[in-house]
Image 1 (cartoon, rainbow over the protein chains, first blue to last red):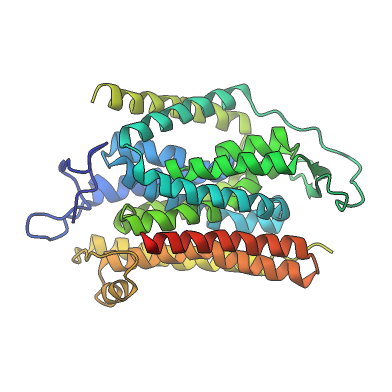
Image 2 (image 1 turned 180 degrees about the horizontal axis):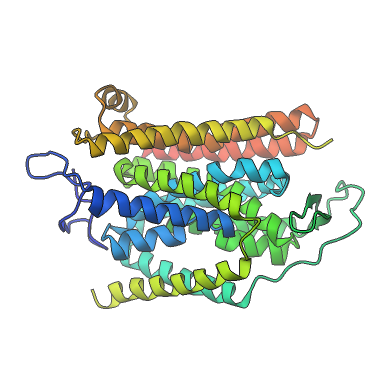
Length: 306
Length: 111
């Protein structure tokens, strides 16, 4: 089996687990690989479902910069983690009515198509370019998070119908106040166009696409932030599935790495969904900014000073 | 009348539990020191053989397949739920997403 190790070079074989030895036998590394991947995935899944970003922004840098996996292998494993986040957290968001399924399905046409294109494109892009793109994405998301996502003013009086084509009308029960908030998702066309880009970034870099979808829904489409994050989490699964299929066929998706990633994320995202009503979004943003900037510096450093 | 999401939620939960069980078993087999096994994710017969042989690779692969398929099955449930309340536009939109996923599968298999 070829090595899955090495930050940017698939040929580099440092000591580590989840590889075979010269005799072809598996070398087990519970402490060196399985447990760290499980723990990181647990945190990434919880964090991902809390802020609607899918966890890939944490998983890919950790797997590459800290654990030494090839970035394309890390991206493919992260995509499975992204699907796990969505599959695990969405039932609760759908049951509570926080996720706008109708809006999510509409935007999914564009994000899934973008995910397919991203998955195909990733085959032809050099690992260093992906690392620079990922580092840039981390910096941009950090800046956006630091500035704080602007909340769209909720519309108190619901529109009677959305048959006029001006947007999708919906409402949700705000868990902190118990108040029913009605809103109208506007600018569906531009929103879908940006969602295509989000899907593309997801497939290319192994992130959920929520980093683009959440602000798009919140700022451009005037969807409340809570609905935007939960709807984004719901959308992540199908988006990442499109590119995961392409990655699987290309041989970049190693199930032995995907297993601890997905299991950690499955548990973590469920915990995150439970915590989402209690944890301060401001605290989450501050932690995220610090972690993201650290990993961005690591990724740039690995490319510039290998 | 808004569409019920019960079938979608049940599908997603079942997919999460099933894939989680496969991944957990794969890790357990790994910890127990079973031979890894190897193959291609597109080789279903190979995966079945590896699963039967209790190899971590087979169970990991099965978990991956289950979790990748789950969003698509959930979309089928979503389409049916919206069709049941005569909200055809959303039902057809869900079918369109399934179409994109089908194209992804074809692209993947042709590579």
